[in-house]
Length: 233
Image (cartoon, rainbow, N blue to C red; front, side, top):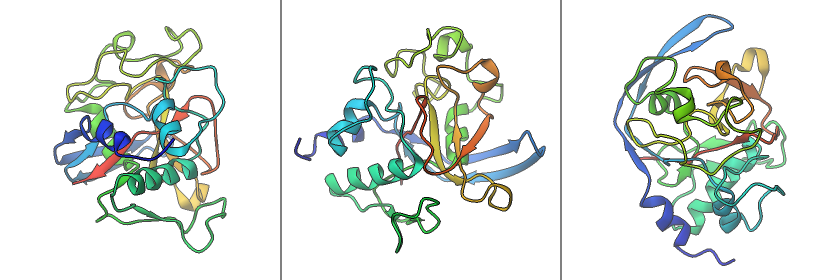
C-alpha cells in the first residue's frame, strides 16, 4: 500500500489538544513521588490500531484480532520506528534519531528531538496527566464502563473506542492494551527498561489504574502491549 496522506488526515483530524498542567507521579515499589510540569501537547484518542499499523508499516504482527483493535506484540523499538515512518510518510519531521547502531537491542542511543513536529510516544508524565483528565481518583470512571479488563474482556482485546472516554475525549487509557511511553523506568536499577502504562484486557482491577507503572526491555513484545501517538505543539 502506498504511503499517501490518508494516515495523516485520519490521525490529524482526531488528535486531542491536551492543555498544559502538572502531575505528581509515584512509584509504588520505592514510594517515591515527583512532580512534573507538562506542556501542552496533542494525543491520539485511542491506541494505534492494527489497520493503521499495517497501512503505514506494510504489515502487522499475525493475530486473529480485528483491524480496529490495538496493535500489540510491538516492542518499544518498533513503536519508535513506526512514529518515524508515519512522520516521514506525512511530511513531518521525525522525532527520533536511531543513533550509530540502530540494531542495538538496548536502544541506548535513540534520541528524541523535542522540537520536531512529527509523531512520537508520550512521556510517562504526559500519559498519566492525559489519562486522569483532571481527576484524582484511582481511575477516571467506573472500571466496567471505561475499560476492557479481565472482568469483562472475555480474554481478548477489543475494538478501540468501544468503552466510555475520559473527560478529554480519550478512549482506552485504562484497559484493553498497555501502552509504551518514552521514559526509561529506572536506569540505575533496570538499565534500558522502558515504561508502559494503562493496563490490558487480561489484567485484574489492580493493574488498571491511572498510577500503575510497569516496565520491560525495549525489545519486549506481548499480546496486550501496544502504543499511542503524541505530537508536540
